[in-house]
Image (cartoon, rainbow, N blue to C red; front, side, top):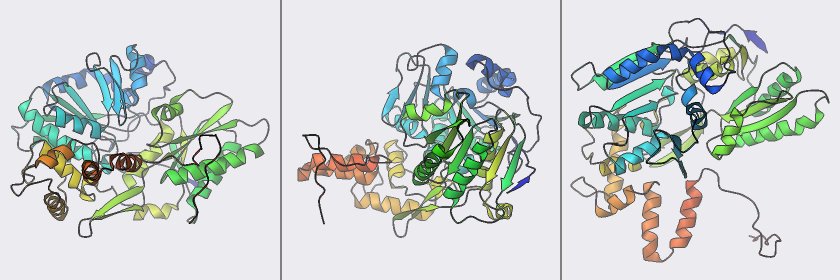
Length: 474
């Protein structure tokens, strides 16, 4: 491998928050939560941020990786510890299938963009909230519901001028978002706050030649790093869950062969399909005799929808330059580090600068049904952050009309209103409601539950006597 000098993550981006090289703060984040929070670079901007939130309806916060814009808010557990309350009381969170919050007592609630978007269908003006912070981290990988939510929030602010919106990211194209929120308004409705980052030196190492098996190469590199006995944990980004499982298995097979007095290796997977408790294990303090190896997904699998064939494909694509730059920043959060890139340096020139927003490459049937449930019937006048392909919108409307979800007048039918309330895709919701007519509700519920989870449980069924049930042949 060839070790090269490395520019600070952010220097390849195209936004005001990371064009400037800024001095690194030498302090480490190894203090108590409250002390660590005050040591973050963002802390000295507290007064400025509070002024902007009070003065402007929209505050766009752009900061380099490590400035602390999200570190205090990454995990509700951390914030609850800082506030000094029990998780679920003043500070809570809501994710799919799990709600750890109290509608009366919770003052700060963390949730996914999809959950908040669904909440607008119950409370169209989001009257429970006075400030909403939208974390558009990985702005180059904007999710579908992030775009929809920003459009809906802009619409809500016209009805609720007191509502404050904070949009933050390390790689956000601040100018385009500033223009978006200023468009159609009186002017002076949005402002940009640029924060300096805390970045320790990060070197980059590249392969001399492309590898035919990047998972095996990742295992080899991790094992070589581990045997060097240098301090620090290891974070590995792979393309999907199957690769994570394989990497974990191959590393586990190597553990018995390491020297007796060597630091022991603790393998930790990280992906969206894990329960919350398992995901939080990566934040637990390391035992001095253990080295954590976190094997995570970097969402390199891109789902692309073809409106002509009405088919979606899941393909592994090269990482974008903006994403690769930010990923490298993980190695320089609390000390100097090394980013090992499992491709030749020459491959950088072929990487796309950014990843297209999800709304430009996904099936819009369910999102359009949900927008109509919010009373947004004229999709042409809806203020999209990025306009979706016209053909995708047309095919989605044709499908909704053919399915009886939308009438000829463009408004939701009674069936459409019922389907829109279900937190599943339109096809699955229709199947659930139709199962009553065919008297197969229990079977359809099972099927819907299986396709709704990211990874169905696997294993042999156990009979009532405790033995394995026979496998069906054929």
